[in-house]
Image 1 (cartoon, helix red, strand yellow):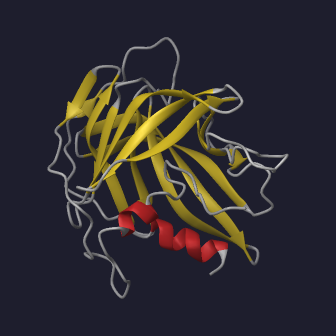
Image 2 (image 1 turned 45 degrees about the horizontal axis):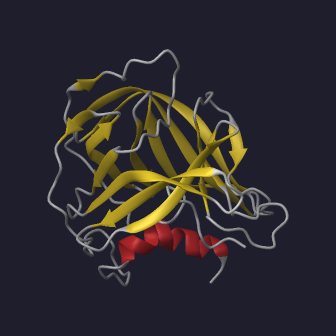
Length: 245
């Protein structure tokens, strides 16, 4: 299976969401516009309206990579499964996924992937996978507001992942980040996830939904089981694509 098909399979369970609440949510007070704040203790839950499946993300602490760089440790709980641990850092103005240990790759030994910009600019573009020869890029787009299950957020940026195949630019997915709030949802191939609960710097929004595994709703003609969400969410939306070489 080629890299493009793996990516599509990995993201295909990001489902359609509707019926969002209309209450407006103000950004947290800050002297700087920060679209990807990270604090130990932050919690985010995203939900699919297609089957009410849930993903719970918690920033549980920090670790040191093998090169002594401090990274954030985040637990992801997919439905009622056991948590998975992933690592992130802020570097050169980017929000990145990373490995804790390096390999023999002299260009990108920790497999860093630039998933978003802390202070984005409308229409700017960047390559996601450092050192990769593929044609996968993110493009930043400004949105006045975005509805979610825990309110309507203003001053939002979408980071659209694109891939050029045969000279044609294909849109894969778009994760959304609100000013001084951070990640609030993802759209992909006529499907979407939206935040139902956020705890950012001890400020809370919305309500935690009951944990629920993904079902086959909205996934016609695809083999689906309770482990599929673990596979698909490890795409570019927030975790980073772990399949690149």
